[in-house]
Picture (cartoon, rainbow, N blue to C red):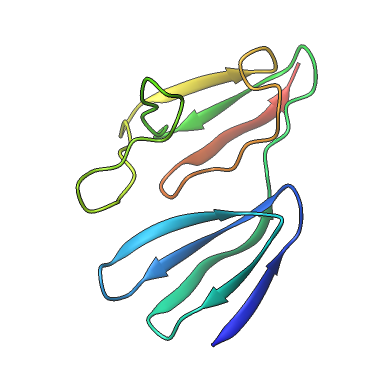
Length: 110
């Protein structure tokens, strides 16, 4: 078992090789990596959008009524494949991670 230390405002993607499901672990945290798990994204900084800026996300995750990322019955995140989402500093005032499958199409810009 390995211990991965995730600093504040960072995140990792962990693949469970038994179920083939990738999960998100946000910092600050110390994560115990089991034998059947593999880190597929090393600690990456969360996306921070400055005031009056925006960024675009490809394949955005579906958000439920409670503001949480929606998952299927197996625990895999549901994505809107082939779509783009514009995230602004007004809608995302705090740093946010990219869920497995999401891509940052354009960095924050004015």
